[in-house]
Each structure stands twice: as structure tokens, then as C-alpha cells.
Image 1 (cartoon, rainbow, N blue to C red):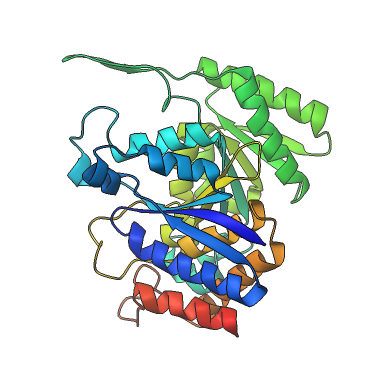
Image 2: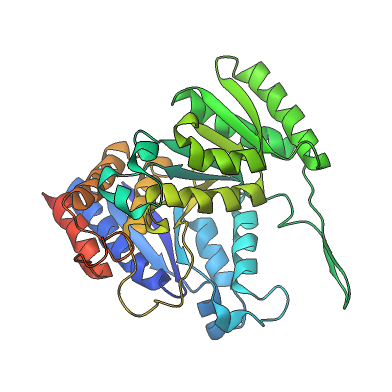
Length: 354
């Protein structure tokens, strides 16, 4: 197979973890006989510095031509005061919108070797396997905004088609798992949540009758994620709630450095990135955890390129490295040995080649 993959290293630790992801992509190409054309482009704060805007035209055109897009991380305090529309995060929202990637998938499956890194007791973590499906291009992040010296507002808006399409994604994925969807909303307060609950219920009943649908208020879901995480299978929610809940769910895995994500639309092209941010406080120190970035490569191989065997090989290599105790600082026990970023990537490559 030949595929064009856009590589957007971004800011902070983004270039560091991206380098390890790229090494794994190259190794997979060599091992399985694929030609991956990897084309780098500036994005986020790095693009603001170089081109004066977070999403340059060249970068957007590359992403629209590519079979898949890999992103490291963006943002940082350096660009906090950028002009409106010119902050790194605005570039990411614009890219998601331009690519039409409306469903963000975030798997959460704690590894036994990393149980000690989680604040939860191991008995709460065993057999946890959650797939969060977050609506990505609607809601309060994209609504109209106003600001004066003394007041501000953000409009949260959803349409029936927006909810229908992401509900279908959750239903299809649930059919490949344990056939249970938990739809999270704030139906007792928000008009958008009332519509969300109504539409999700209709889609599931008419198109996925074999899937068990459970409705849950977002505050209840936040508690359940730490009290009984095994009760979740597919967790479906709107944009802002999904952003918050998946950060909370990272405590189950022990670190954001273990959680990948995929953002998909109606076609095969997707945007893949670790869920962690740019972590400017540790940027340049070579201590960032690259495993989430590498696991995002596995999602890219599976979902955009339909290379299941190759994706499974990457996941198995990461699991092998973790099982062997090859842990970065965020996962290692206090006083224990911690690998740097490059060494962790090398551990995955060694397992992959073995």
C-alpha cells in the first residue's frame, strides 16, 4: 500500500512524541511492505511563529490531500495573547471543521503494569474497557461568542443531523463490542441536552435495536467513571462534556500519556493525536511519554488505512514494552527507573521488530 500521511508535530512536547510515532510508522512500512509518504507541515503555535497564523493554507491543503493526518500537540502560554482567531486552539477547531471529522474516539483500557500510576485501587481498574465517542464539531466550542468589559456569552447549539450522525457512529461501534451505549447529557437543565436525548433514543431504537441504551446525566457519569468504570462500554456525549470526561478517564489509565484518539468523519480520512496537551513545562527535556502518540498510529493504521494486522502489531509492541517495565516518568513508581522519550520509543521498536 502507498499512503500520504500529513505530519503536524505542533508545539511543546508535540515534536518529541511525534518523532517516535514517525519511527514506528516507518518500521511498520518496512516490516509489512508499505510505502508511507510522510509530509511534515507547520501547525499551531509553531505556524503562528513561522507564518503568522495557526493553520496556514499549505498545511490545510496538505491535510485535505492526505489519506490520514497525525498531530502531536499544540498550544502553550507563549500564544495566550494571540489575536482572536489566531490562537493555536482556533487552528485545531478550524482543521477539524475543514476535514469534517465530527466523531472523536478515545479508547480507555488500563494496562495492569500501569495500575500503580492510577489513584484508583487496582480492583476498580481490572477489565475496564471504555470507548468514548465525543461529538467534535458542534456545541459550545463552535457557537457564537460575545464579550464586553462586563459580560460574555458562548452559544451552545446542536441540530438533529449533527446528533444523528455521531449517534450512528456510537451504535456501529457498540455492535462490535458489548452492545451497550451510555449517552451522557444534562437533560434536566439544557435545551440542547433535551434534543440530544430525544434524537439518540430514536436513532438507537430504530437502527440499533440490539444495543442497550442508557441515559446518564454528566455529573452522574463523572462520578461513575471513578466509582464503577467497568459499567461503561461505549460512552457517547457532546463536545464539551466529552472533552472533560476523557481527561478524567485518563486517571484510570494512569496517565494521559497512554491514551490515543481518532477523529473521523464520513470518509476514511481521519485526524489522529494523543489526548494530552503540549506540556510546555517539560518540553525539550526528553521525558514525555510517547506511548499515546504511538497508539494513535495504531488507530490511524486501522481506521484510515484498513491495516488491521499492522495496527494490532503496534498495539502489541506497546503492551510488550509496558509489560517489560519500560515506563516513562509519568508511569514509573517513585524512585523507580524511568525511560526518556527516545528510549521508550526504542522499546516499542524493539518489540515490534521482534
